[in-house]
Length: 330
Image (cartoon, rainbow, N blue to C red; front, side, top):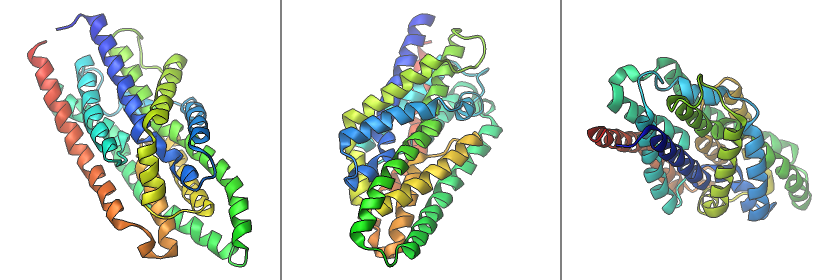
């Protein structure tokens, strides 16, 4: 259908398009609370997110290696497999973004690679080691995020019980800048590495590099693409996460970001790809639940959870169908 060089170019373009969509739907999670509490302007927050996402992405390659080598077997897939996976991500995540729903690009990417891998080579394309890490990541993002936010906020309530609200807001307005920076860095260290890993995998499949490795220019290109995506369309997700889910003050934003960032960093150093969307969302819910359970807008929460649940099957099916379609003409 295409010669090798043209196919590689098209697949790399699809990966960058998916990374751009990641900037729409996933990267805004790192800055949602700091914008909603008005500690930083949207422009300032995007600058912070772009720079620290890039720095975080350059802090290691453990997650990139998991995505690039341990989810599907590079020896039995091809560039068509990767391209089809990106189509599934782009279609589903763009639809969710239109409705202001944050989606997990981690799960979209894993589901897309899985669906395309099954269509290409069957169950033998899947690698158990990587899937074990995916399941651990689900537990990290759901439980550590929620209980981390709950415990940190509960401890702050006790420590600040006799403090003046104005003083608390001023102090945590400054501290939240640090927690937002930490969150952006951790987002880059885990989520930013995922599409970097797929990009490097495509270079390997296309014969550009002899073994799986992550060149510096790939890290920079993907990080900048994600930052531009956040700047162009991130506000829809910031609005949902920072304004619709629960009412946040700087102290709440600090607790949620700190809990999420610590969870993400732990997973990153273990090479575990997890959903940063799930992690910051469950952290915000945990923080909101310390005030009262009804402080969380559960209708919005259920919409987000529904999008999470649908991500796996929809991205997997789209990628499977796209792969079968392309194979007809190869």
